[in-house]
Length: 239
Image (cartoon, rainbow, N blue to C red; front, side):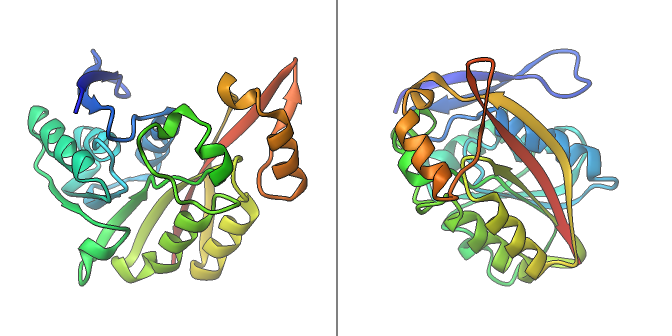
């Protein structure tokens, strides 16, 4: 495994902090940053927090450093990612319980104040062509919703009464399906942040694939200024 460093700037922090990453664990993207900022804005009191699909731990650790968690838990399907999550937590003096496993499988019988879901939601045909998923599987289905929908269908079983789940929705997936699932499971579903960004060049070249997936209703994007523009929304749901 090739370990290198990734630098991230916390909100209101005087200097950036370093995270150890590798070529066998998901490398943080702008979506992680959007999710951290959205959670920080909405978490009014620290609580027991689960970073689901934690990767190297950047979301949970950042929220821990910003006093959003009294207890921090994390899990990922990748044992390499969990190892790095533990290393990064220790480097920043954050206590964490990290487990290897798929979705909520490692947390049977546990409940949390906050669940932060950073499990990918990108149409699978695009994911395999993206640098985001080099050496990392993305079994997200034709419309990119398979993993996110499964989490939302189960999340209420792992929340305390009044607990909240946070999740990003990327326009390179079927956003309507994800939102519909959330509304079936939770009384309150709120968009707490939205961010637009230019599609990476390696995906922008796949214009025929992009147009087909869009026409089939699997993804969405805009064409402006000669660029393809996508968006990431961050949602909060609770009963």
